[in-house]
Amino acid sequence: MAEFFDMGGFGSYIWSSYGFAVICLGWLNYTSWRNAKTTAEKLAILQAATPASPKNASQKNQLEKYRLEKPRPIKYKLENS
Image (cartoon, rainbow, N blue to C red):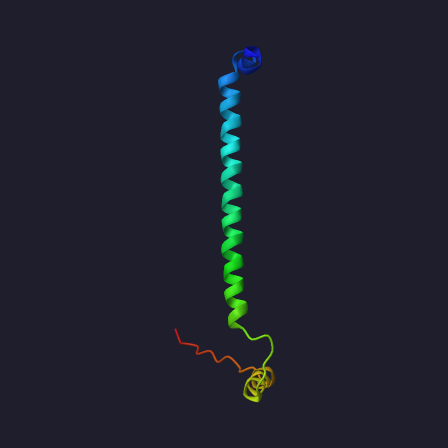
């Protein structure tokens, strides 16, 4: 069993590399989980704040106004050099 852990004299390098890899993968797993959790919380907040469908006429009229509004042309001022 000692020969297995010694690995031909390179055991300290090999086992420290395995340990470092396990720490990196654990950290990656933790940060991915934390990111997914905060993203899910933000999504829940946004979904709660946004109505599923407009129920009164004023909201429908506002949506129609924005949908039918013509795009405004962009005016640029050119300066003489």
